[in-house]
Length: 268
Length: 306
Image (tube, rainbow over all chains, first blue to last red; front, top):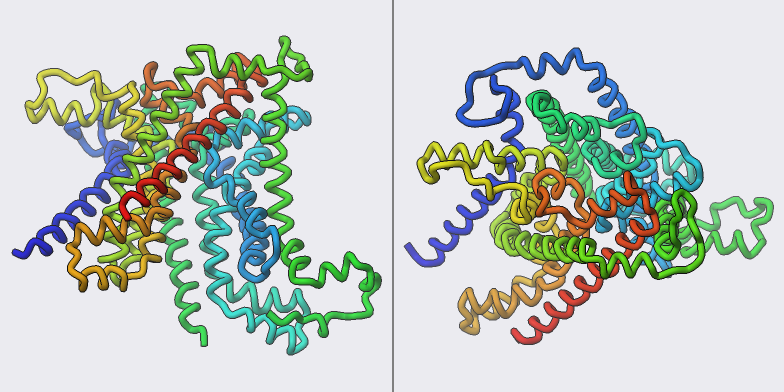
């Protein structure tokens, strides 16, 4: 075997091990969630769905799931609207100060979440705002917008601005152009953005932990349950459902993103 | 881009004021379009951060905030052993995690960029999915793996490698580093991949034609030219991890407490907002300085290689 071929195989093996380690902890929880034992340990004892069954009658968990749904849907819709504005400005207009404006919008991507959380908490409490799901949504919007922008920028780059110009030249109003040209062209990216931001909101813990008051979202509920060792199998079952939901939505988001890319290939 | 000004209704009221004329310019349209997300970020991110910075110069007497300027909080944050230790530990953890993550991720990013072929997008998707799903749950999973009766100990016992469970696996700094490095692995790949994609492949061919071997090509072309990606990846991991709250709490134990836990206490039970604010600001300033030092270091190394 040539040395080149050997190092190639070594690299491929490394990548496979790397990906396996990335997934191992994520897939471990679902494995234990079906294990018929009160503590997660090896060897596996037997298959059971009782941990999932006990979730069905858990009112507190249902409340948290409902809260997460409200927060996630609101954060996804609003951050995608804000993301469309930002992505449009970044791709369709050139102006002084755009780099500074974009870095302010994208900053939450790199700031430690605890800094965002305590700053927002201090201001909200200072203004006398009661902590609620609304305050969680406000916080989640900050961290969802940058991801939405990332998805939508590639969406805007994917279609030719001359289509919008053509529509306006043919007499369509600004709103008509938006509704009949821009949004349909962007549709796959918008769906992708909605799914990604919903998933981020669904999984987000720190902001929700600081800003949620008495109404927990699912991760905050899980955090509370971690104090009780006996509840661990239930937490694993709930966590597995969350992971499965996230994986499904991210896969769907990726499929829509690819569709947007294919649309791009149809460009003249 | 040609403006569509002629099709706009020119007779609209007030269209001749300078303000609305500005709105018709490229810059005006740009600012109007970007204003909703920008104003949102200014009001809910930049504004509150300014409030936190202001708080850090105030003091608290029971429940009332005294707004006269003081540096006492910074004195406490930077000189009291407990906070100093936590700051150092947080920095140590975040810098270690950043370097470990980038060193481990680089070959993977290289593989996807150079060997990915048609499947680059699929590879990136597969690698980044774990990052998007379940922050809290991933950390919980490491607790299950590293715990005293955890998966790793049980497996090692079963294999006969150890006679009794190791208590050194969890509740220390190493456990926090392993967990964080795993959490951020996927995120580090992206900037590395982007910079590798931008690398002009003909440079590598030229070097090969001139007789450079693969190692020399990598060290003298690939590595220096992807330095911006390496820097971006280091920052994107280091800065958020310095303030991580859950990992130290779940797997760090007593010896793995980090600065975020101290900050949280000041905004929760102990409730000394100004001190908490000073801790938060100090952390951000110091991590920015360390980040700057790393950037300079890498720039220096780059010059050395050439």
